[in-house]
Image 1 (cartoon, rainbow over the protein chains, first blue to last red):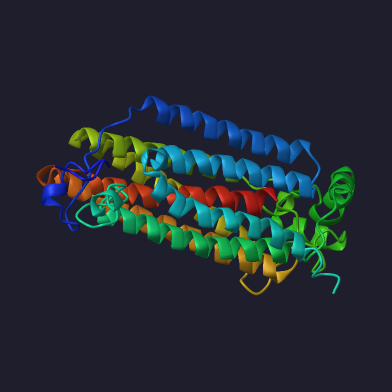
Image 2: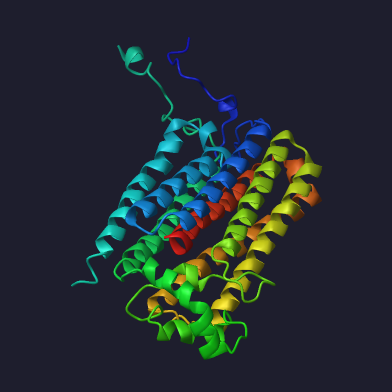
Length: 116
Length: 264
């Protein structure tokens, strides 16, 4: 009788970490092309902001925000992160959230270096 | 008692893959995280240094466009191609737009497009490069999808398109560098303004370009292995997925290089 109620991998009996590969199945190509058009649209929006809005820190934050949205689609769909386990996704994405904070912070910080 | 304490989960007790990914794929993810740190440090450094200089004021550029026709053309070009580096840079240095004291606007530095001499076309070429890289990312993920179906022929087709996309991007990068270098930029001097601008441009786009180059080499290896039937015999196409992860990462980094160098 099993004492565990968690889902065991299909190949657990012969699990060998050096060769074990989970079974894969295709998620179709429709989603891929949808994400391509979204990424293209976001790039066009970037270019539109560049030409229509005068440079400012607000515009920079818009560009970084659009970059992060693009990153979500690339990592989520193209890199299949949305089909991975939450524990793996957390391990990879959590450190990057701190990096984004650091990036914006240092851009702001740089403003004061010139006047020292 | 003891049966109750272990009834929760034995995910981490060995004998299976806790993340439900293969060893190689997990290591690829961890490598990409570390590589993301490296690129982040470069971009954080760029952001901080760029804002330690004042920006080129938009009024300066607008004023320049008004006076450009009469002043620059007459004084330097004699009606010739005024956007040619020879006349364009000295004219803008005289006008105080390109100076060591302020960060040059990418608008005025990267405004060339192949076969469109003398036209002021900022951001257009680099948008094309972005499009090429996103498209090659799409063909890569289509190759991965073909691998998941075990379709060898489709993997070959999409890998070939990905390799072509990679070479196209590298060609664009080389063209961009050639323009910048022939204008007089080196890693320690920059006719457009602070030398740090050129140094950071060469460092960051060079580092990214080398990643693209490595990615193309890896893609070619996968392409050849697939033709030889290595993955068909192995029974799975996981190598395509792993190299695909790397290729998408290169695309992802470009999204941010584009944002920081050309938009901000």
